[in-house]
Image (tube, rainbow over all chains, first blue to last red):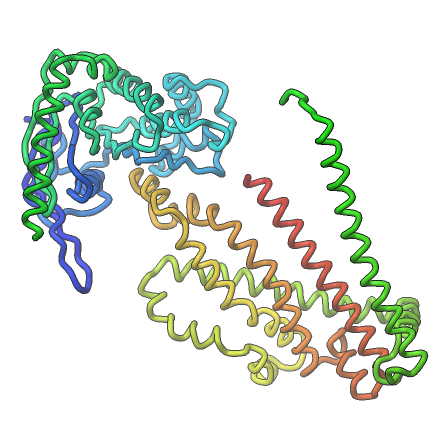
Length: 262
Length: 268
């Protein structure tokens, strides 16, 4: 039995004039502690899929199971990280980190200490009483990670969390994130359109195609690359081979997509 | 601290800056003095009819007399109280209405046409009806001051609620937040600057409502003095009230502006 199971998820967006087919019959499984990437062009429904797993929207069809039980019947925390940190500018860093348990009404005394511990873990000390606008972009995204980990999420959903950062910060944060997630043994799903990021970070990659959004293929990242840090992985010969393979596949999907539109 | 770097040109720049500020102050004072001097002179030389336009010296004399016999304080107190009450009631009711519009899409869709009509309607035209319904007294005048700003602040604040970045809500919802929690944690604090900006507009509006209300019904207050002065052809009294109103309204506006600055600084 897999940790996370998606069974024939389909989703349609409705409005007065259109019924848009966003996701078509998506099924896959994720093992505990694995890191999965959903790779695809914009408009392939990656973010919709994440929102469905996070239960922000209900799928039109299909079921999601976590540890063998339907996800909506369990009171489990799911961590969701967005493109930008979206820290609340009027709250201190400490209050930002603590917002999860407060919203979930699971606040216990001692959570402040837990939050401070997490901030130290993400490499930030002595900033608990500062405000978000006093921090750099990379620091803010680390705070967002601490906020996400605060509720001990059973699952971590990452919606291109590095896309708004400069390249150097992005590489550093990728490596940092992988270490953190291994430490905490988190099962994670990353949405991205960056092929390199997907290969460098994941155990498995699901390549998605658009119109309607569906899984095109499943690519397993070779062991040698998997066990390297994201920065080292980018230098491995197998990385380049895989990059080329995925690049070609995506190009082909693109041409097919364009052809079907004409 | 940042290291102290300086350059001779910087001192020149600072000097220019303070010179510019001084010039602006001079310009403002000259306009003020010229206006009152011209008014006084033209009235004394009968270029304008002193019976209608009075003169600054007469207004000041009246002001001193009323200050000494206590009637300045008496009328001013009443009008200021009515305006403040109208302002607070109107603004708070507006924010509450905006909350319900935001909370329920259906409610907002249902009341939308009525809001449009009520917003377009000149509220002072409701004066006679309000007075008949609530009786001649404070309550009608305060209602006039409140009703004139309630709808427009509701619409502005509701718009502000909608402009809050939806991703803040997404963050809260990923923790399972309720609609009320969304409002309390994200929508309200993010819209505070918008809410405060309606305060400034509402101060002016509630003065309009209260003065018109006093025109219609009151037997005390600054609006009443204007109507009374008009009826007995005492235009010194009319102008005296007008000067007082202008002064008080400006004072209140400045008060709100300071409050806004203070609050935004606190919220950063």
